[in-house]
Image: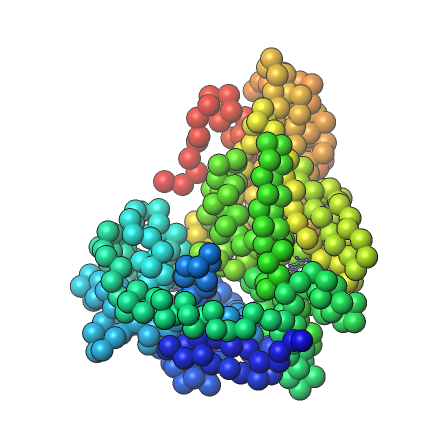
Length: 478
Ligand SMILES: Cc1cc2nc3c(=O)[nH]c(=O)nc-3n(C[C@H](O)[C@H](O)[C@H](O)COP(=O)(O)OP(=O)(O)OC[C@H]3O[C@@H](n4cnc5c(N)ncnc54)[C@H](O)[C@@H]3O)c2cc1C
Ligand code: FES
Ligand code: FES
């Protein structure tokens, strides 16, 4: 039996909302209904971090803290979680250790961005005892400040290194866990003035819902879907969230294959892939921000078929396959055959992405680069990905894919053919890059001109060649 009531923990109480509006954002709920106005709205599209809040979630009996953008999260997705706002940090009139650090290091001027920064730092402090530059930069990658400048905020962050986590959240951790466990873990079915929201717990129930609601929009992290509401001002009539289905959140590893369940977050995926393809990890670290990667999924990225979806060229050159679950059967597609045209895939109504399979071949050499105007939280102008097998100085396999070069992320099949069976040499690569216009005819747009894209695509392939030849990474950014 499904429930029409979502439940979440806030300020030590379980809140219940019967049939909430599934299109209402968490931010609007916080500010307009809870009247908690510490959390700000800047961009309403996940890009500035002013609305950063933290969600506490139970994971193997422990609470993990995730910073998210409240402006692009739908209210029903709070179900089963602990909502933590900037107002919760102060305790018995004493600022939280993170707030004290922001004051001590002068991390705020006009103050508009400050609640968001503080919440990002709060989440970092709760999750990590030992803090280094990489951790701080990742924690702050989704927060913009227009007046203070980042140095004082980074100093405040660094001062939290090795600071004992002895705040009031820690002290009442057992009580919080007990309360979170009290929330019934059952299917949710909401009907708000004809707008429906489903969050089934099982694949069987998901299939039933998709059968009776063929036009439903599937929701994973919502970092793309929510913009239909917040930016395009549309209503989404029926939403089916995959996030309560434990069977879709998995990682399977063998010597020859990785299989990643559809709802695995980009953050979990980034930490998995580091061991296998470090360049994939480097690109993912620059994918949106930590707030985006905490909720966004690799399956969501694939389903958008965006020409500038960052994971897509990388998965294409790795010969990834995707497992599609329909109402009656499962199908497997090579990702190379999955994208049809601009933002169109082979997914049919009633089908969903179940998992992604990435073959592992230890002999292959994998390289990938993202070129964007900003280092963090920016969409690619061009993303290039290269997977080679070289034997006795001969190229026996070349799988090359680019994002930002055509209406879909695409393999460079003419260049690939030209490289295979050739000597692994500068001459070969100089010859191959001259064919880039045969594989791609990119557009001019606000991110980059056609000629810039073509030049970058060539140079990235040459960069891959030189890095492999000289076994050295040529850094793009310092
Ligand atoms: C601030 C910001 C920064 C961003 N930065 C980047 C970036 O650097 N690089 C980049 O590539 N993208 C970026 N994005 C875009 C977005 O984060 C990605 O496309 C993301 O991977 C979408 O995943 P999601 O889980 O949030 O998908 P959702 O928003 O939940 O869904 C996206 C689409 O996929 C469908 N869908 C989701 N899951 C499934 C499934 N399992 N089966 C079938 N259909 C499904 C949905 O119905 C919807 O149409 C950014 C977005 C924002 C808001
Ligand atoms: S308001 Fe800018 S990220 Fe939410
Ligand atoms: S303190 Fe003004 S925007 Fe950051």
